[in-house]
Image (cartoon, rainbow, N blue to C red; front, side, top):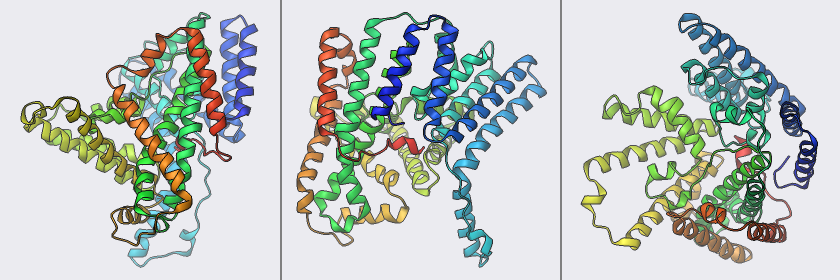
Length: 478
């Protein structure tokens, strides 16, 4: 059920209507949970069975783990829970990837059993990567003692399944969510209005910007040799803006919908293309994932506490696993690995030649140039993220610099190319000028009536610019 579909709008209105007449807070949470399961089952009813099974398993393990004092039994229970959570994800997401690579290795060795050519047909449940993060962090928090109690089963189930964040986040921490489950939220008209505005803003970013940019991007990535250099380079930078407006639009809608029900979800983006350097970029891009990887992977590996070499190792391992989490493809692994190496290189340079001393600052121009340089490097790495294979990514980059055959400027795509270039410029400039003063902070200061007018205009303009076959949200595939 797409957030941008009319079906979802009807579902949302039905949920709000039911909850508006339901007084008991426990009953309202049950309605939210049942509605979340219905939302999830819309794509495939079998997906809900996986989610419900995972929920029951983690509730049982967490309660059993917190009944016993720290020791061997508690540790074994914890390890079993983590293995089951990650094992379930691995079976659904990485079985085919493992089988393909095993077949490749056996072919190199001259061993090609006929049975190995048959690929297992495993359907990846929507959002399993995201709710696996949620279940895993819940068990870790229980084991560490960051949660004083495992939480009420209803609250835990709702924490795992809450539909605004279920498919693609933001990844919320158990402690923050359980606090909001204790008492019924007050009916705050200002928060409700802000939620409606965020829904409109996210709808505009996805439908008016991301889906329109996707037309050129999809065409160029499908056959780059047919297009000229201008088409290719605009498509490369266009995908950077497309994935931001697509995933950022989803996040805005998710946060907005949660506010309509009285829940607050964490921010996931802070003008990522205003970043200066890779470390700054990862503090602004997919923030809930970045902080999850920091707290549950990088820090347990040792963080920066065990010397410089170990710090670099921990960074690269964390980013390699970040890439692998995004998809069962070597393109994602390489994307994450290069980001890790860039973070290490940046850390090394800053530690030896602090930029605030070695390079004079020339005010706004110098800052803007660093911002543009970061955007260019991040955009080139997005090629690995978007391309279906390493060979196709290499082919596109070779076409971009004229090494391989390059076609002529596609006249039928010239208007689309110019429109995409304009959108790129506007989005990157918008991020930069809002680097110091967040756009959302300015909007929250606006009167409610003005937010209502702007939200209506955003819906109308986006509906007018809507493409006939808008793409599914990109992160639904993860």
